[in-house]
Length: 98
Image (tube, rainbow, N blue to C red; front, side):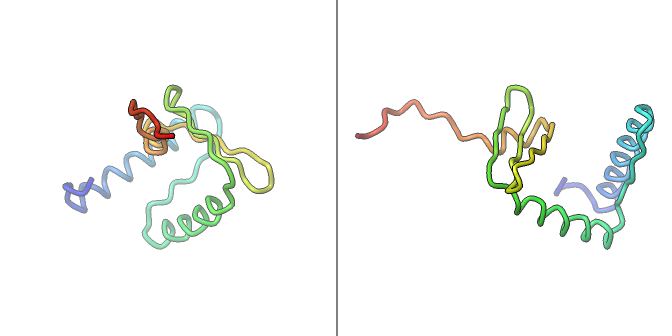
């Protein structure tokens, strides 16, 4: 989104957040969208602390899923079409040197 003007980027974020909240409502689950700058910064701080508790990662690009294993032994599953690909190592067909 770096080539998009800030107003357009903000509009897209609001639309995406609203779409997620609407989908959650269809499942009879309430959602809370945060797009205000200060609130997002607070959410990011919380997410960074949460990610810092990760001690293991299982990335499965074929099914679009990443499983985070936290230091307390709990698992968090993230469905994403992008994240598993970002975490995957590139394939190399070169012979490994002994």
